[in-house]
Length: 372
Ligand SMILES: O=C(O)CCC(=O)C(=O)O
Ligand SMILES: [Fe+2]
Image 1 (cartoon, rainbow, N blue to C red):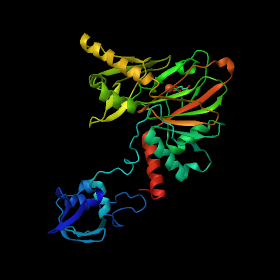
Image 2: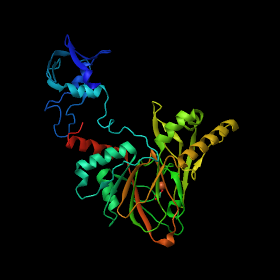
Image 3: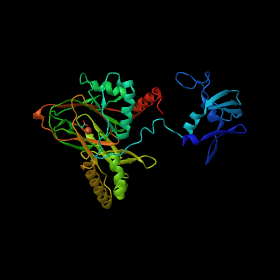
C-alpha cells in the first residue's frame, strides 16, 4: 500500500497522491518537520525551535524532488531536505511495530510456539526481537533456563520493560502460605483469569518465573481471550453485545488497600475492535440493572465462562525451575491446576511490566537490526 502512494509537486504545492487521493500537505506541517542541523538536535531528534509560537502562514517558495528527498525553500528563508518515505509513513499513520503486533488466534491445538533459551546477552540480541515478536503474536512467550537466584526476575523485567509496582510489591512470591490475601497463595486450583482487573490501568504484561516445582499438579494454564472473544462475537452476538456494553465493578480488599475499577468484561477500542478482556469471577460485581438486562448479562457471562473454562481453548503445561513466562494480561487468561503442597515445593515469582517500554524495546531492536 505504502509503495503506491507518491508525493508530487504542483505549483510549489506538495501533494499526497495515489489512485484515490489528491491531498495537499499543509506547508507548515512540512515546516515543522525540517531536520536542518540548526533546527533539530541530531542526537535526540528533538526540535531546537518551537513551532507552537510561530505563525502558520508560511508558504513554499520553491520545491523540487530529487530521488527520495523533497527539497524545499520556505517563505521564511529556511531551506531543507525532507525524506519522502518518512512523510508517507507519517501520513499512513503507520506505527513501526503495528504489523509485528498482529495477533494470531489460537486454541488448545496450538503446538508450534518456539521456546527461547536464556543467555546473559539475550537482551540486546536478535533472539530478543524474535521473542517479543512471538509474544505479540500469541500473547505469551516462554524462556528457559533463566537464573533463579536473587530475584533475577526483576533484572529480566527491567531489561525488556520496566517493572510496575503494585500493592503486592515490586515482585510477588507465589507459593502456598498461611493467611493468604489472595487465592493465588494457596494450593487451590485457579480457573482462567486475568490479573488485577481492579486496577486502573490494569498491568499490561505479567511475568511468572518458576524457581522450584516439585509437585505433580500445579500445571499452568493459558487461554486466548482474543480467540474466545472473536468466537463469541460470531456465535453469540447478543452475549457479545452485552458483555462489551455493561461495566462491572472489580474490587480487591485486604487490610491495607481497597482497589476498585469499573469496566466491561470485554473492552473494545474506539473502532470497536478487541482491546482487553478482564475476567476474575472472584472479584466482579455487576450493577443493579433491569431484571431482563441482568438476565441476559448472567447468561452471557455464563457462556463466556464456559468458553474460557472449556478444554477446547485451554493449553496446559508444567513450568520447570528456570522457566519464565511473559503473558499479555489484556489478552490471555491464565490459571493453574490444584497441587498438593505435601509433595514438595512449588514456588513462582511474579511481577508486571507495561506495554510502552516493551514496545520501545521492540522498536529499538528493530532499528538496531534494521528490521522492517
Ligand atoms: O500459581 C500459578 O501458576 C499462577 C498464580 C497466579 O494466577 C498469579 O500469580 O497471578
Ligand atoms: Fe493470576
